Length: 426
Ligand SMILES: *Cc1c(COP(=O)(O)O)cnc(C)c1O
Image (cartoon, rainbow, N blue to C red; front, side):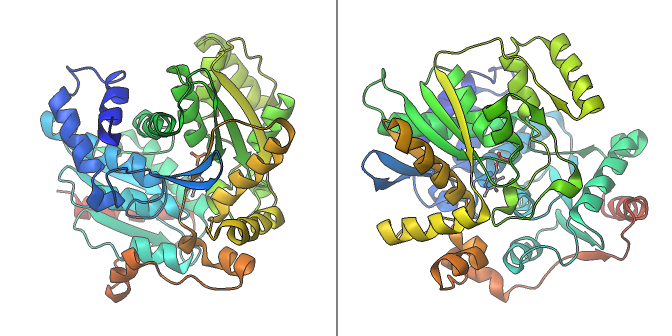
């Protein structure tokens, strides 16, 4: 089956025909996963690294990171449903980097969606700024306050607490716990499995660079659907998840404890999809889950008991320091000539560490971004600069489109954002 056929099959298990008809789903998929957007029919092709080991390349979309795979589908699906219902949706979000551009690229050109994206002034890389601020679309708005990413996020929360404003202006979100995003990510694990496995009694090992645990959760769902998998959850020095899988204790970090690393999209204090994973692992018992999460809010840590054991799924974890990430980029380049981005390198490091003990069968490393997005880390590892990739060069000649907000107090930023939304929504 082609990528599209696999996507249709996987998604049909979760989307009923009365919600979205099979032919509508097919056209949404065709629109989302085209060779024009992802460079080939394969959408997430596999690049061999060594005998039995491949890179599952998830970063061939418009913003050169794996979030495109989920967000292209999500935006088209939402646009379709909104059209059927005769509704519009205004999305308000905050970004510190990669998600912002992936959301904006996905919403660009959709009829029923608008995006108001907050990003902190002067705190994103030049490349990230170029990818976000040079999108020209009447429904894409970049709002750039002073302050930090946390201030932007707090602003979004403040706006969401204003129920009247939310309903009056049809305000919505597309955050990382959105189920449709996870679902779209399940597809590429089934695709990857179908391309490398010849013997179904064997187990596929998948190393996944993890932050909010969305991508690893998608691999877990694929396991629940019947694939035999070993999931290697790989974190950087922000190792909430590695801690949990090694010790059984889930301890969220405070904002100030989050380290800035070479793999910034994994710099998190708590993993927002972890709760959904535990729900399943606790036998889908909402009362038990709620009580654990109440304890978590009170004490900052829990040691939840997992009751459901799925024979299909083995989960292991590991972490890579910044120094190890750089070493791995150098090592893989010297061995293969392939340049890994720092997020993917974290997963590669964890894969090599764990494999030396057990020796895995067929294996994939989820490649989550293209290295050109992280020039400084690549320069440090390899001593040269990659430059702007060909697919982004057209942006160089474009002007920036953004609205500055000269405030850093979230309450004041929220007021200005609301005014801005009122002025730009009919
Ligand atoms: C978002 C992101 C991750 C982390 O994915 P999660 O689903 O949050 O675990 C890893 N790498 C890159 C490049 C990302 O953008």
